[in-house]
Image (cartoon, rainbow, N blue to C red):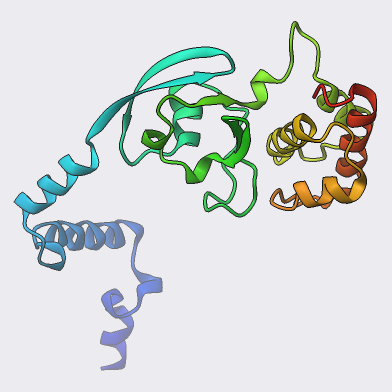
Length: 211
């Protein structure tokens, strides 16, 4: 009895060959695919797919350029900016309105673009990080970030820049406390907050708000 169990590899997964394992997995998957999942019929599943794929044409003015974009109603603004308009400077971080990496300026205010459905933004004027520089010259806040070593890994930098730009447009010379309050929704996982605050204060002092 002991010898039989020892030779029977089906009882010991560690002794089963890779081929046997894959064959078993393939058979299980084939059986599973033939069984309705959670009682959802194939007709209902097809209907759900069609609903999810419904599309709407919207108009966006991004960095001064007008775009007509056909979007799926479930897409977020950050997905449209990155995947449809190829503006990949806007980053997807937490994708749930917590980190601020996806911040853009929409109609003059900083917003989390991961939390805005694209269909909600029809007709909006949007500025992304690609729209800050002009004529090959960095904006004052971008230049101040460079000089103060504001970016570290750089992933949060686009969102930090957009929030700082919106702040400077409304408060030309913010002090450190005001900068901290404005940037509270932008997280820096490198914890480079002091340099970021110093950069924004410097940008305000230099430009008088022309961020």
